[in-house]
Length: 373
Ligand code: PLP
Image (cartoon, rainbow, N blue to C red; front, side, top):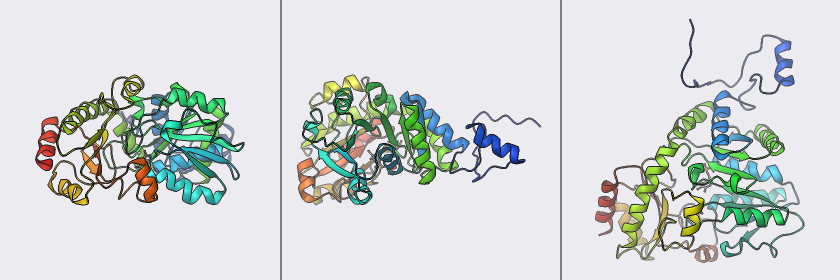
């Protein structure tokens, strides 16, 4: 019987069989000719890595067990004990926790660069500085980094630019084309898109780094499982369509919130009033994604009221699924920053982050209207 599935089946196996020693030698002698052990490589995780690699325009990628594993792998690809990294101050709280609490133990130190100073790094660079980590669109204040200028400034100092492209997705921005050396994702978010997978991916534009990433993935055991890879590949197939809907819904909701008397400020790059609106338009090919944050009165009761009343935006501290949700940066992603850092960044009691899904727009608007009024 000839079996020819249209899509890649799930290779739910931890190991692959060999007929004899010749086949074993073939595995080692001809890389890519066959599989041996799923931590080292599996058709499903390779399919995911290759699909994102193609979308991002890279030369090699690895799929990892989470977005955090992707960030870890990217930093280790360029750093070792004694090295120093720069990190945009506006960054996902988990990334700064990884740097502060774990990589510091491995002898990798970090300096945070305020958003306004990202393009003049002279005062931050040390002889041991290897890279700068930044997000295309920052979590949770939606600040947009000018990746081309950032790449130019990093390379002027001999640094690598590592971009967390999670909020934008490769549909909106492709950092490697703008000069970044690595682009990475929490696949958990837009790439998989259905809030049912935890995964990551790292993509690079040079073969040597790709080989290094592969080695890090195998030796640290960061590899993604077949089932999760398969789900992410399935989600990825509709990424382009989803981003269009996320972006259209979010723009309308941002306008609605900006006009609402209970809302003090809306952070959405698609609004004319956003400080990097022109850059976001150019860098994002006219789409701005589904993420935004907004400021209510700085009282927990205002936030709790919204959480209790909304039916279409459940408080679920993740993002970028097809179903809308909201999150609370001060109590979740940015909980472990000092209160001074939180204040400095603008992560305050009244700040709510929305992940706008692809539901019918009028239902989302009606829900927000009743929840806020
Ligand atoms: N990068 C960004 C921008 C994120 O928002 C997150 C998680 O929220 C991560 C990385 C970490 O991803 P994961 O939760 O898949 O490990």
